[in-house]
Length: 428
Length: 157
Image (tube, rainbow over all chains, first blue to last red; front, side):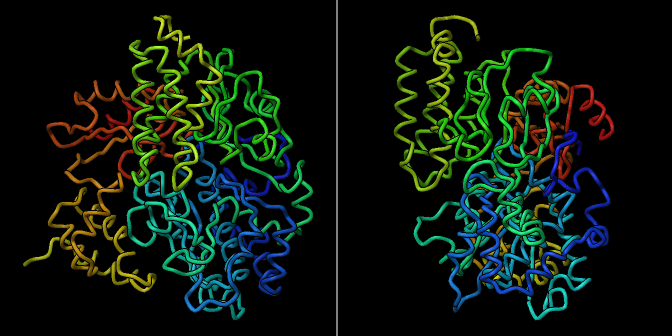
């Protein structure tokens, strides 16, 4: 695996050990203060750990950006059934490839985060639900877990304390929807990965009916740093209220240096990321569009690049930071084709439970396809906006919105691309 | 009736059973193990899995058809899955797909007559920074070009 290493970007938190092949080993991690944060946390009360995480303003790194400390605090103290810590390592949002690097280079950072989460919510069992395609990454995690058991980091006496924590890897089998937390939980239980009706939320009734916290890999990997350095220090890195720490940006598409870039959240704009760090656009071509937060995020036009990369500014701009998968498209690639590829994906991955999503995603794909092939009419452009509006907000889970938002935004911002094709013009 | 799945399969299932409070949770791991043995999962194997983990055969069918990774018919010795999602498309995935199809003389979804290669489209593999990507069996091949995939295919032939 090769990545572009960002130069001179500090501080590194979750990317601290990236590209260092030795860093995955337990001995190496231990030598670099590994598991010190877990030791420290286990000596604290669970409430104090949660308070520290709340103070950090850590928001979920999977896409929704929910405050992690608050999520943990929803777990009931008393439970007659086991509670679970589940790591969402499904990484299925197109444009996103950060969790894979964390699992490759820092599996123990993730394991340490899960131990701390277990202590905080009073859970003794964790599962890492990893997408099925990441076979090698799953093997690396298994190895890291075996080593952790052998050294007393996991098991009946975690790091010599009375805290018990067991951790297992569970592989998915190819389904985008299993990145949605309740779809993931159904999949973990051996069922079809169809999202559940909420409430009850996983915090009350999650895996196997027990109170469950589901956190993304990057979220959990940030926990050791927070517990070592304090929530306040993490919160201070953020440039906007209620959003702390750093985020890993996954840049793909038409840039000279695609790869992973870790920055304090909100400190860099999209333009700076593309031109100052990623070496600008391939072959000096002109940029035409940027999808900032994984393929579910509404698209941005070239005049919208001066937005800081954080949850709130992105929301204000009518898009989302999502999973930080920044997909850059230049003038050489037809935009109608781009949205057709994206819409095909959502049509393929719709689980089929909700009619607006099941039927609407396929319908949108059909309409875009005929426009792309010169068989559309001007009414089709309206039709696309109409279908998107009738999916948005009308489904059980966020997949419907994820499919509708991109279509609505491509039509709104690049209408002439659609109309040119309809009138028999070229792909702009 | 003689068993289709190996001793190792049954040993592994026994080993992981205590992790889960329900039998059905063993289904995805069991299907992965079975596919590792045969390269695909036949109806007979599905039925054996159902009895091995003590769930109804209908549940196995219901679940296996939800997931794209389980092969419901045999695939070639080398299964090439070409990512054609957006980030890979921006980096030439469609050309790469056509190149592979031409090279192997088959279309997406088909297997070469000697049973060696199967080629398929696949949705995002989560390696977009090193696009375009092809997964061959368990391994990712990244930053690909037609020349690079030619070399890889030559090594497998």
